[in-house]
Structures are given as C-alpha cells and as structure tokens.
Length: 505
Image (cartoon, rainbow, N blue to C red; front, side, top):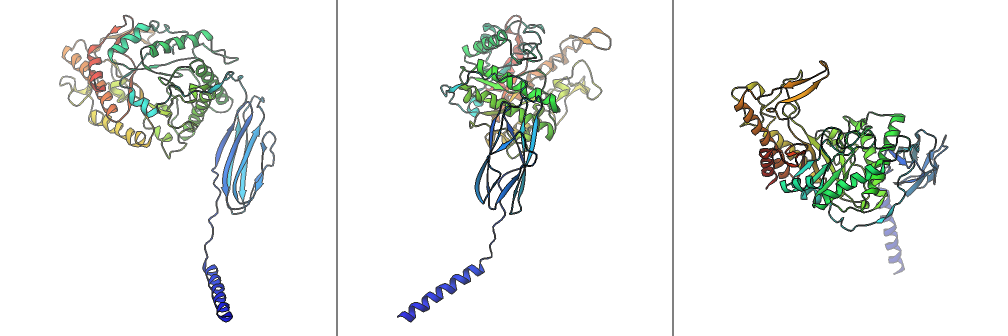
C-alpha cells in the first residue's frame, strides 16, 4: 500500500513538473496610464493619477519645484499618485512633465499644468447639490424641444439690448412666441466684449446679471425651455496661446461661476451653453476648445444646487457638423468629462448652402447667390440663381441622418442652435465700406413671379430643416425672423406656417 502511495505521489509531481515546464505563457507588459495632461486648479489643489502596472515603476522628479507627488515609485499592482500644488500666483502658466517608467519596458508622459490666478474665484457661495426638478436627461430634454427660436441681436449687443435697433425683451414677446408654437428660446448673451464686465477684476455688472435673470424668468413663466450662452463675447478664437489663452480661460471661468450662481435656482428648463461659434478647425484648436469646455463644465458644477445636475451644451469646433467628429465617441480629443452622466449636449449651426443662406444682393467672387432653393422651386427665367442638385433636400436629409447615426444613436443629444436663410426678394439698404455710403439693393421686386417663388422657397427651406432634423431626433432653433420685434406680432405668416409644418404641428 505504501508503495502504491509513493507511486501516486511521484506521478503527480512529474505531471505538475510537466505542466509548469510546458506553460510558456508570458504576461504582456501593462501600464494603463495614457499620455495625457492633468490640470491642477489655479487656486491650488490636487488631481489623481490612477493606474495598473505589472512591473515596478518610478517617476523621474528631476527639476520639480512647484509640484508635489504623493508617491514616486511602486511595485506591480494597482496604484495612485496624488499631484498637488499650491495656488499659482506667478502670473503665468506652469507645466512639468512626469515620465512614468516601468521595469516592464512601458513608459508614459503625463503633463501637469496649472494656469495662473488672474481673477479671484467667483464661486463664493457653493451649496449642496439639489436634484429637485432636474430629473430629465439631456436626451429627454432635447426630445421635448419641438420648435425653438433665438431672441437675436439683443442681449449680445455691445452696450445693451437696444444697441442694434431691437427693442427691450418683454414678457409679451415671449407670450407671442409661445402662441406661435415655439417652446424653446435661445438667448445669445454677452459679457466681456459688450462692456458688462470689469476688465481688472472679472466681475460682471450686477444690473446686467439681474436683467439676464429677468429675461430667463419671462421664458420660464411661459413654460419655455431656455438656453443662454456666451455670444460674440471675445476670446473665442482657439488659436490663442500663452498669456492670451490663460486670460481667455480665466474669463470663461469667471463668467460661468457668476452666471451659474445667479441662475442656480431655475429647474431643468434652463440650460447653459459654453460658447456660440468658437473658432476651431483642426486638432490643436479643437483640443484647446475641449479644455475650455471642461472649464465651463467644472465651473457650473462647482456652484452646486440645481447646477450640479443641469444640462450643459457644448459647441462643436466652429459650430460645424463636419468638425463635430473631434468630439465624437472615440474621437480625439473626444468629449470633455462630466461627473454627472447624461447631462451634456452638442450644438452645431446650419447655414448651408451659403449661396442661399448667407449671400444676398448679388454674386460674390467665390460663389453665386442662389435666390431659389429646393428641387421643385427653380426659376425658369432666372436659372443662374437656382440651387443645384446635391445641395437641396437630399443633402439636408443625409446630413441629419449622419448626425443621428454618429451622435444621437450613441447617446449624445444634438441640436441646431441656429439656422436661417436670407430674404432674396426684399429690398434692403446696407453700408458699403468702400464707398462709405448706404447702398440700396432692390433685390427681385422688378420680377414679381420670381420674388414670390424666392419667398416660397425660403419657407420651404425652413420646413425641410425642421422636418428632417426632427425625424432624426435633432432639435432646431431658428436664428431670426417670423416675429416683428417692434410690434411683437407675427411678421411672416408664410414662414411660420411652413416651420410649424416641419416641426410636426
């Protein structure tokens, strides 16, 4: 019996030796950090690096002065490093490069960056998060927007609301818009470039903040959804670098800390939008825009209350659908990070084709003016100014389908913050910078049939944009028109009826 036991044990030992000897599996080198930049608050604080490594690791700290690391080396396993700095009162940005190196051959480069303190923090009264009235996701709110419009050329005008000829916004104007079928209002707002901020301290004039709140309240009184932004406000060209970029970031943070605090008690009907039409057209500028959007998100969330759960709107680079892929799932730099799930939207604008939507008064050196848009709205007497195939209904439909496939279907709600088209039939007077006089443009009034066709094609354009966007779960905000602002009445019933039809009324 003892001999049998001895044989069994020997066999097992041999089998184990064979299994071990035959197992030639080697672990793949692992270091889960990415090459990245981590921003430390300008007023001081910490950020955390969390990673897994299957070998011993270390960080070269040669030349570190202002940055403190909680750990500079470790063994295989899960690890964290706290990066800590005091307030940056140097007046300039500072950065340091961390080389994280493992004995398994892996290495990563992490840049720690800290902007300077330019303005004192305006997040002076943060409160506890309040989820009351904030239960809808960004996707759900976007679905609720049936027909939107901007209150154009008013709150973003230098010096005040009436600077460009529009009257003050009233509660009655909002009543009229609601009666017309609009259930969402976009309010372009200015602060820095319009003279409402102290250039030394970054403080927004209290009277201006009160007026913004009053206008938002008008909209909320009528059950409207509201989006306010930073519009024509300067510091929105993201080719900025160095001290100018530091200043732009500081202004952005100061604005949104103050605006968010002032409007903190409104429920989910009120949304904030980071910018209007930020100038960014490649990876470097899209990355800077991404970082400024992150400042916006963090500033709003830091104020607490309902802002901890508010839906926030981020503009695509140059507010272009074509450039929005920089923020697409899997894109680079990708979407900024929000600690609250499902509360971000993306915004783009639609002024295509420019021949019909932007040009007026004649052909330009780079394009012909199109006075008629749509496959069934071509002029037989003025054919040189018809839209062409590939820029008409099919182009709109394909574009909206693309937005749905690449964003909406992947959990990112999208809306058109502005769209519109020129009135190619109405006369107008415009200042000529060369002649230094006002020039009268008769437009098409000498051709009555074509004038009517042009007006009908404009109304058709409104319908197509609203309809094709809605079919693909993209909401829309008309830039201007339809309402006579001076009389606070419907100014263009044809355009309104067409827009309502596209919106599903």
